Length: 168
Image 1 (spheres, one colour):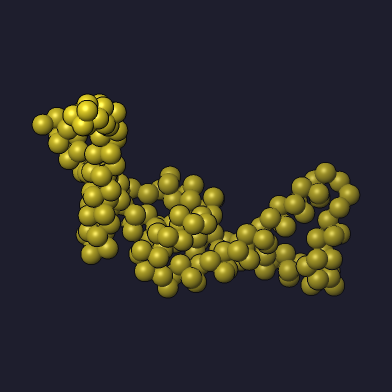
Image 2 (cartoon, helix red, strand yellow; image 1 turned 180 degrees about the horizontal axis):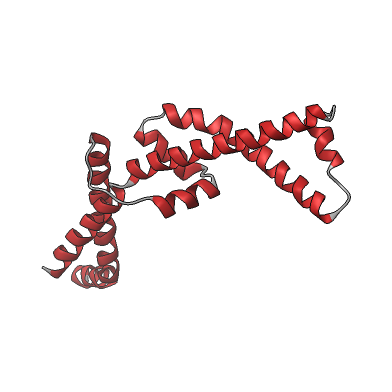
């Protein structure tokens, strides 16, 4: 009876965690969009400043050498430009994806800064949409199966020996 209660509790916990998947991935997409808009402004401002100086982006980045402050600024700008290019490719794909594919993309290649911001701002909710209910069902089944496996593993050697003894 205790094993069944533990299995049921693990299923409920799995359902609760999995039900947050679509909402969390939606919040993650919002964070990515905000980061992409912010970085777009930074990159556009830098490109405008480089054009005003009569340079292209690479030449302007190359000119940011000399002092430790300029070198640090060059590294930050290079990192921002690379992240902006990655987000430009990722955001449209996530905006058009459904909840299952969005969750897959989130697990496959998350943006660390956007993920951190999403975790800090996310508040769990009860499942309301069809996708959240499907995630809930999958989470319940996975949680219950995982608990059942963990509860079965310690008893496996004894069952194996008992069967072996009965054969002899």
